[in-house]
Length: 446
Ligand SMILES: Cc1ncc(COP(=O)(O)O)c(C=O)c1O
Image 1 (spheres, rainbow, N blue to C red):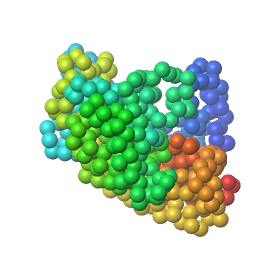
Image 2: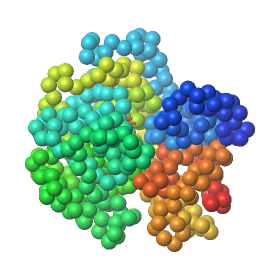
Image 3: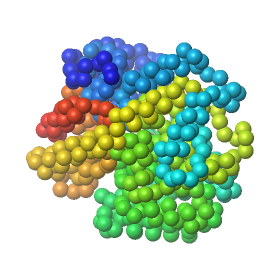
Image 4: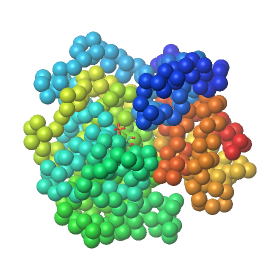
């Protein structure tokens, strides 16, 4: 599948000298607001490995933030995108259309939950998909208010900054934000005051009460939620929460939008995470894993809702670019052929088993307050020993120690205290275990 040997190799300090040189050029030329988790410069990547310009091979537990689920150089993605590149790079679908765009929309109709008539519109980024879901919901309902949740993340554009919960680094200094956005509680089981077992019922009741009393259900165009909250800390809303909110939306003519940009396309062991509780969203936003690394996003949903926007109201020069569409068709083909849902479930089994062992056996295993997530979207929430107080320092030190040993891990969470693991779904089990060995050793230094 890929020419890159699937083995970890650390031959220089990380970052190495060539990366350091490039980083110096980057600091002089690239705006400071664009950060990087680890400034090792990539030479090539594929399977479960990122090879840097110094010849180091890192085990990839990040997938470019949940994007390269099929690997960063999947054969079918490369083959289809290369062929498309040679045929034509762009016409603009709004000027003269092409088949790939239509085929991606057909695939989305087939793969997303529900057997109702569906349509899609394609865009470039996740934030753009979310913005368009709001436009479509407003056009359909003729209402303006949008409800989002504590710990939610939906992007960095003006409207999506308003939808995103966390101030620093996403919003600080960038306001004013878009109006008519309201935030309500989510069922964060680990931190719910009366316990995880009550979180689903109590949080949904609170959220519904706030929507009804503070906004008025009749003013709400859309409720937008990530079925597993990504940047907020891989929070799986406690059981019962999503069905209650989806039912409330249905009863009140509100468009229920599942933001599956991070959790979709086999990441959680199902095509879409909302399937876990049998939720059928009115609209679903997708991006990231959809196209094997090429920039593509989509809004998919009930045909009558999707058709509410007038012709010319949706779109954009590059939306549904033909090369990105070809990449998506290659990515979906790979997911089906390699049964990447099955692979994600196996990754969960291995990871959760190993992490639970670390929690119970390591002398400082109680730094791991919670192990959660589904499929290949797994996280540990780090706390101060014997408490639930967030421990972002431990998360940062563990990440740093893993990086130094050639394992790329990412942090997230409202409190910055969550280590998240998002390996490519095609990663070999030996690499997966080796990455976890490195994490286990990293605990010794915290
Ligand atoms: C759930 C969710 N929504 C929206 C976005 C924004 O996507 P993009 O960065 O492609 O704009 C992200 C990105 O992390 C995300 O995780």
